[in-house]
Amino acid sequence: MAQNTPPTKHKKLIDWVEETAKISQPDQIYWVDGSPAEKKRLEKRAVARGFFIPLDQEKFPGCYYSRSSPNDVARTEHLTYICTKTKDECGPTNNWMEPAEGHKKAAEILKGAMKGRTMYIIPFSMGPVGSPFSKIGIEITDSLYVVLNMLIMARVGQKVLDQLGAEGEFTKCLHSRADLDVAHRLILHFPEENSIVSTGSAYGGNALLGKKCLALRIASWQARKEGWLAEHMLILGIEDPKGKIEYVTAAFPSACGKTNLAMLIPPEGLKAKGYKIWTVGDDIAWLRTGPDGRLWACNPEAGFFGVAPGTNTKSNPNAMKTIQKNTIFTNVLLGDDLTVWWEDGEGPSPASGTNWEGKPWNPAFKDKDGKPMLAAHPNSRFTAPAGQCPSIAPNWEDPKGVPISAIIFGGRRERLAPLVLESLDWNHGVYLGATVASERTAAAEGSVGAVRRDPMAMLPFCGYNMGDYFAHWLEMGTSVAKPPKIFHVNWFRKDEKGKFLWPGYGENLRVLEWIVSRCRGEGKAQKTPIGFVPAKDAIDLTGLDLPAGVMEKLLEVRPDEWTGELDGVKTFFDQFGAHLPKELTKQLEALKERLKTKVAA
Ligand code: O2Y
Ligand code: MN
Image 1: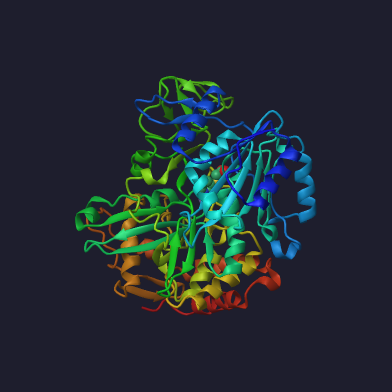
Image 2: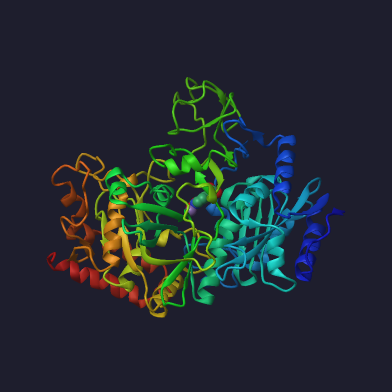
């Protein structure tokens, strides 16, 4: 079988590659070196094979259009498994499969699955190569689309093999698109073996195995063992008018504007005051205790895999600037003029084009229900290098990470949760994270408005029993000498008429300003049964035309509504049985008691 010489002396790695080739029988094996010349060559190959279409290179240099199989457009949680020796280890919120069964099922699918194809070996580092935060993975894949995306999303190539040496630890990430049949789709995690096997999909989180599979599910397991945190969080820096930067991480369930917050542009009033925002990461944060006793964070990724629909110059100007070059667009509209477009995107659509399903499209076309025909799939994506973002922090690749002053959790709630809330202490903050919930939007599965609990926004991404995960969070509060403060935000509170009370987007910086002031022991707050909320005039509203009384509504804490929430929390907690830390039950009980008392000034 044709193979470029393995550029490594790592025997275990070479043996694993040979073993995999024997089973899946590719025509050739290619070790990815990660060089710019190789990237150009592989892009040309993708164009020649017809699954990459170059965009207008004058307008979008280095950009390509791609389309996935129409049955393969999003992560498939019901086909995602944690394969641990015991079901107890996996917990009630994950799908479980016995490791032996997982390997058997995968072997059946993988048998001969790469016939007629090239098997690519992608050495990649999550985190800057050689950083104490970083972990190495090797992805074996038969998808050139995956290779080209991984080249953007991770640090890839020879430098990683050099770092690995002949004996280094790595996560085995085996991927085959097989026949792309859902019946052959499985995303299996073997945390006890430090390995991942994914078959039957070639899209996003199912196939770019460094992202959700390694950097969250496997890493969360490793983090518990090694005493750190692998979290579904953005990281950003807030530079104040004196030039001092405070870094925060934030976790939100989907549809809460996480990418927009990561790349926020200060509104005029705050820009004039001298505020700047620095993006460190938009999706994943790895957090470790630093030598100063603080928590430090690193973004393990090198690119953004962002949702296209809804991204425009108003919602996220920095994302729009990021994706002007060297970007892969998947499942959006391809205009006949070789530009791209999506719903709620920039300006008018092209006059005509081909939609995400490969069907002819123009703005007048209707679907079978008489609604406007979709140009882009709602989960269509751009894959873009993080370094191209205008707000990228100069130190975003610092191997020692950035020091974290605040951890922010958030959810989408029409009522109940105030605009912002500071926890009483670390353990109460863990309770706030463990009870994160969001109301479903029309775009999400299930009935609109129903509350979905999503602790720390990690429900689909925690690689072990979430009860033990909560215990690990509580433990971190004792092992970190100077832990960050923990907050909860809600940008989505509505009035009686169903109108959003808070303008959101760049204006969210006003809330971040209060959070930073609290971290510095400065901002004014009042203590309520649910935590500290800003004093009436503590959030700077200069230049914002907020009608009288709205801030009061945004900060209102209604004990009756919070009491009504407690049964749902208890039911959610009960599923963890003996794995639920007693401290969380204590927090729930203490909150119940506090709610019986009046809001204290
Ligand atoms: O649908 C997919 O495969 C992508 S999911 C995704 C991508 C980027 C950032 N976050 C997510 C997510 O599901 O949280
Ligand atoms: Mn995510």
